[in-house]
Image 1 (cartoon, helix red, strand yellow):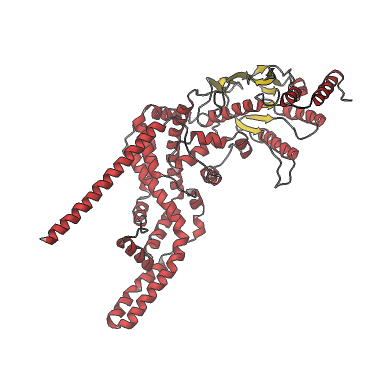
Image 2 (cartoon, one colour):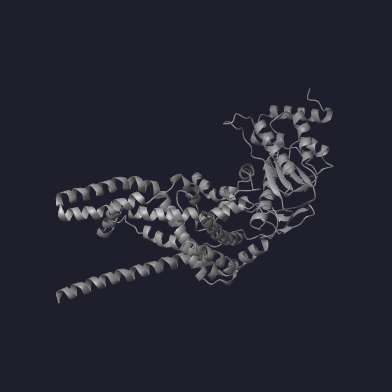
Amino acid sequence: MEIIIFMSGIIIVLFGFFIKGFYDQKKTIKSFRQKLKENYGKYPEKNYKPEQYENIAKYYLKHKKGYSIDDITWNDLDMDTIFMLMNHTNSSAGEEYLYHRLRTPELNGDKIERDEELIQYFMDHEEDRIKLQLAFSKMGNTGKYSIYDYLEFLDVLGSRDNAKHIVADILYLPAIVFTLFMPAYGIMFLIALMIYNMLTYSKEKSEIQPYIISFFYVLRVIKSVGEISKLNIDILKPNCDSLNGLRRVFKNFEKRSKKLAKDDSNADPLAIFALYFKMITHSDIIIFNNIYIDVKKHVKDIDTILTETGYLESIIAIGAFRKSIGDYCLPKFNHNGLLEAKNLYHPMIMNPVKNCFSCNRGMLLTGSNASGKSTFLKTIAINAILAQTIHTCMADEFHSEFYRVYSSMALTDNLDGGDSYYIVEIKSLKRILDAVALDHSAPVLCFVDEVLRGTNTVERIAASTQILRSLTGERVKCFAATHDIELTHLLEEQYDNNHFEEEVIEGDVVFHYELLNGRATTRNAIKLLSIIGYNEKIIASAEGLAEKFLKTGQWV
């Protein structure tokens, strides 16, 4: 009777733990669902370390082909920060695909209609969006490394053969027989086998451990594919059919991976026993080797699954980004060379001044330092990229062709390579000229801030004039900022002239950041010296020299 009561008590306790675990899981999911609702349309609160960007870029680097945003342009425009503003993803697959998407602008409109259908659907259908986000959250992140690190270096492990592990396990049978008939020799044989397996286990396990982690991630992705299919979201039927077809390829992988997934790191007796069993039999290494063979056969299928799931999560991230910025428009693409925007603004500026422009050719921008020239160039460039990647522009209207976008703006000396600023600059400009001449997949839209600032005035104006003339025509449109007013006269047949102005009001400089027609006519650089507190003699002498040069064209 006491035994029955004791056993009943144990069953009740175990049942209580089960109920509590079930309740805690439901509570966690409910809390996460609420968090997804509340955070949708808010800027993501994520902290990034430099090495994380390396991992995030792995999918892009693996799939890089044809035109993409090069490193100079990406860094000029601070596109890492733009990525951070829209990274509403919950999985590595989504995060890496979103980054790839931003670096790979479309050069035609083939995908726009389907993308817009999905983006708008998940913006309008909160419940379906949250269900899908929950599925992506179960995929989670790969951690320290990208899954593409492991997929790319599968060959490093070489061929994996189970023969030696199986032979070592089979030898336990004669060892046991020896133990029955010749105990002393049998026990020595058993102990020797166990010691051999335990000594070789650590080396083998350390080699495969990183890959086991990546296989677990693939397993989570495959499980999530099953969950996505069960959601019965009609609009995703084509995507789910494709994913289900791919999932069927991995039936054996799923079964074997589940065996590897059991956690033996706990301190309970069963876990400790399981760990020692693995050490003396290499059972998990044998399972891993079978999975490894499967994975090597189906690397392309894994890549396709990651692409499909990453694409769907990037769609949700785009919708969340649109909601977070508030004022946006869908770009309209043309083939007539018109680049036009109404109330265009920069996504990273709080309370921005919005500007309008329309041009069929390039534009020269003049104005003093800090007047807004560089920011305006970046504003157009960023919106041109977003138009062709996430079909979203920070404007009331945005009309454009499909362009290959390049910039040459925030350059520095290359100390490692030994290049001066001027050498870095002319190399940067040459890559744009080469893109125009060598690749005719789409016209080039380029942005240059202070052409050839790294050399003397006479040669700068002469060389800048010819370079900027080379950046005109049907295959290229250039926006350039300059302090050299001479260029606005030399190039007025090829470029529109626009400028930014500032005012000195009550001893202070006020910048309006409004784009104005024509070349700049004001000069406030010397006045700024006075405002900052420079000696009056310096200011007076500088103004005298400037006036003399403007009248005579000579400094002395």
